[in-house]
Length: 91
Image 1 (cartoon, one colour):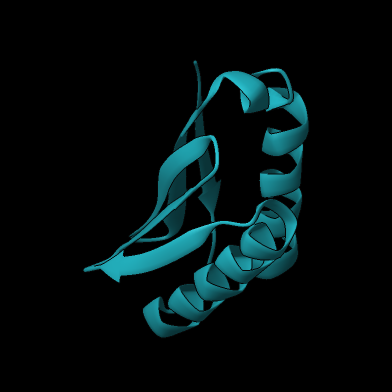
Image 2 (cartoon, helix red, strand yellow):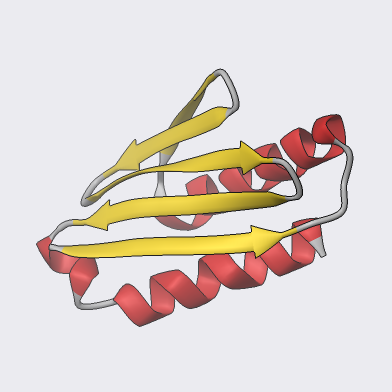
C-alpha cells in the first residue's frame, strides 16, 4: 500500500475553497470513479483501491489517500493528476 499526502495553499474564501474542492472531487470521480461525502470541513472519498480525504484548512487544503495494491503502481500518475486539478481549481 502507498500513501499520498499533498498540501496545496490557496487564497480563496472558505465558501470558494469548498466549491473548488467539490470541483476537484467531481474531476477525481470522473477520472477514478470515486464516491465522496462531506463531514464538517473534510470531504471523504473512496473507490476501488483508494480511500482518502480532502481537508479544508485556513489558506490550504490537504489531500491524504491510501492506495491499494493496483493503484500503488500508478502512485506518481495519481499524485500528478491530483496536483494538476488542485492547481487548476485553487490556483
